[in-house]
Image (tube, rainbow, N blue to C red; front, side, top):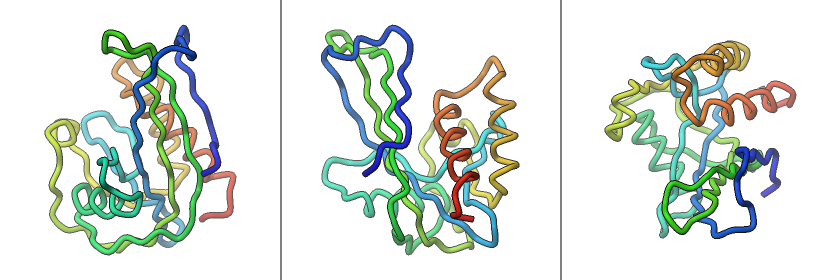
Length: 170
């Protein structure tokens, strides 16, 4: 998959020992809007999706995550959009860099939300699925970026939103 953006946290020892994690995100559209997860606690938007389990394919991860986060079953991949690689300082001793790769796919998904099955942190930040224009999502995320309580993913998701805004997806 094509790397769209590489984001490096300052002072990361890039050639050191790395801990790598992979996540899969879905870009679903409907009538000029994107399916996003709104954090009612923080006011930011993020794409549905999440960490991939060892035995899962990218599609299996998306199906599971859309079901858990949006209550939507039957997600299918249309095509690859691209990936974002983030290199961050590791928190674990003996690890120099935490490398997070997020793969984004353009998807077909239903538009009716069923019951969510959220993780504890997702419930804490009050995630809920919504259809939103790319412009409104960018504006909301940019206001969160300058706040004192900005979640780590907001910079990445905002960059992807801007790439979508420049594309012909919508």
